[in-house]
Length: 171
Image 1 (cartoon, rainbow, N blue to C red):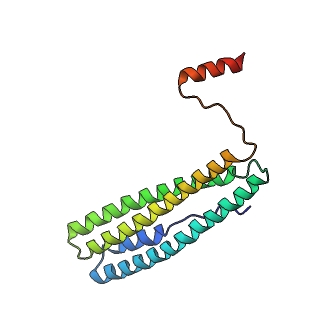
Image 2: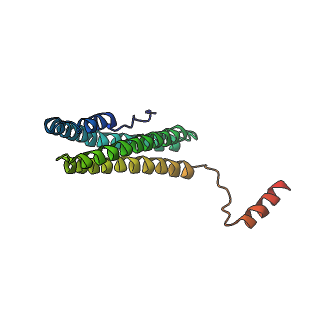
Image 3: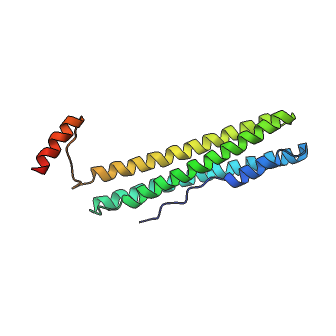
């Protein structure tokens, strides 16, 4: 099976560009241009990463159909780990960008609105990737649960039903 694709965003280049925005107008324009380029590369890469996740799901589906009971376990764990890392990276970026935007507005830097627009585009890209990862993981969990021969257990609606069921199992 293909390994989980590496999921990443151009967080480093974007943060580096943001820091340069606090400089002169010329440095700010150069930083905005660098951020736009990083954002375009990130958007192109995002679609490649989501397509790789779709291919991985197809492979897992085929392996589950061939009775490989554990085929979905590692991809599910890997997707969860990627979600957690991306969420942590995203939080760090939000903190850095909020600080920089505040400083820019306080200092009256002219390109603050352009920076804000770029950050909103980047935020949308992060959200799209996080949603794609979450959906990927949920689809894998669904495939694992619905695989032929999957053990089906009782569906219990409340704690009293659980106690009754456990009492019968223990006897």
